[in-house]
Length: 341
Image 1 (spheres, rainbow, N blue to C red):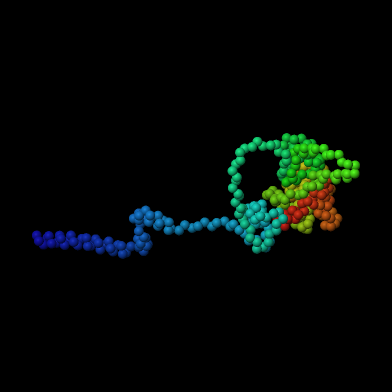
Image 2 (cartoon, rainbow, N blue to C red):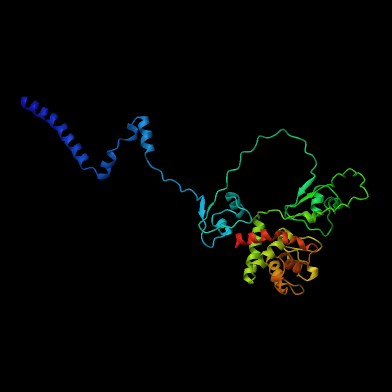
């Protein structure tokens, strides 16, 4: 009896000892990976604040911010930089305070991000709009379309601006929509007074407004430049072509114009520049400005064109009623050529 009880007590003590030994052996022989994770307490065992701190300590890869600046390299043009960085030449002008006559240099740092616009002012109380007295010509406008848009007669538009059916208008030009009020009659002049000087016309006082080319105008300017380069035309001749296209069509592929004029250079089928379909192709129009067509002379056909004045050379090709208007665009045409290459 005593022997049996002693044996049971011995077994009762020995069994837990064996179990603890087995558990300890299992922990010692656990894989290295398990030991690594066991060094950190489980998140569920941590207080709330400690759990959040542990989660916050796990690093997250940061995203790479897009470039905001670019250093000009040798041979770069604004067009190349804009295309490489997914922006436009006009946006580069805006972001860097540049103008159509600006020139970039290797080593110069350009901003690729436009300045944030100023906050919009608080809306003012609505005021009844007075009828417009002036309008600004947009690309593609004609005198007829302006008159119809503003509900006035074409003859009244001519009279208000001293124009005629042969007059040419330009993007950015300001036109009056009504004739100015007549001035009060002057006091009679003495017999010895000198006669009044002639009043200058709208054409005499007009000057080309500064223009920042939009995407369509930039594409057409690049086409003219590329065509001129392929034909070996000197830079001055390409600038003459750019100025001519701005005068004639606002550097757009205009579907119509004065009489049967068409396209970039407002070439006329009736005077031998080609068929309407040909002239409506900007590539054809640019090439024939330089080389001429079957019955017309291009710039390269004019003897001694290099020695002519800027506007005079353009006039030899275009035979315009207003030859003086080409000279007004020379500075900007040369700046576009410098910017676009």
